[in-house]
Length: 143
Length: 87
Image 1 (cartoon, rainbow over the protein chains, first blue to last red):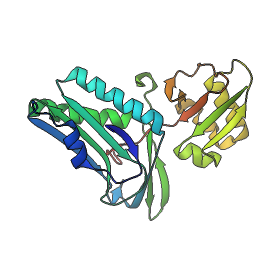
Image 2 (image 1 turned 45 degrees about the vertical axis):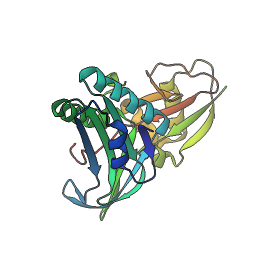
Image 3 (image 1 turned 180 degrees about the vertical axis):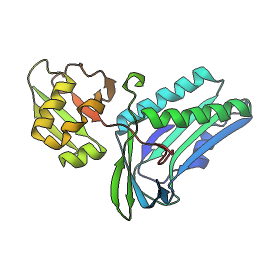
Image 4 (image 1 turned 90 degrees about the vertical axis):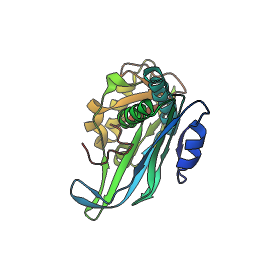
């Protein structure tokens, strides 16, 4: 599946192959990985929650938006949920296009857009306790 | 009539449940349903102004009326992706 919320480890290589096209000379792949600190505090692990049915629809929709803005040939997005350890991959965005510039730009835009509108939430579990991180709402932008 | 309610992330922790079935009157909007839920689970009350709403896995405006059998989700501000701690 090209737009997927999963509890299983992500597979960037598979997504790279899924978006690659013979006519496209570039594939940009972004990996979001769990880091060991946040806002000056040590993070032990993360937990992600999602509304999978809606998240997968919204991912497909933002990919369609990217295709309108750039001549990209294909897009695939995966986000993992559940408990993730330091260094594990939480997000993969793969974009193919004829040339590198559009692939980089569309991939960058997709990662930012993803963060704003896809119903996924992150809980940081650190030495001092645990906390759900909540972004800023932009209801008028709901796709 | 009845609707299924789904809660996520901190909302789910605050209410102590991920989903529940509620009885409600005709014509109630999704935001009114949230207000009713926050009456039962007062810890949710502070969220009323920062929510997005979804019905049957589609975003809807706050004045969207709930129909019998709907699945209503209350969506707190999202934080997926990778820009960890940037806000």
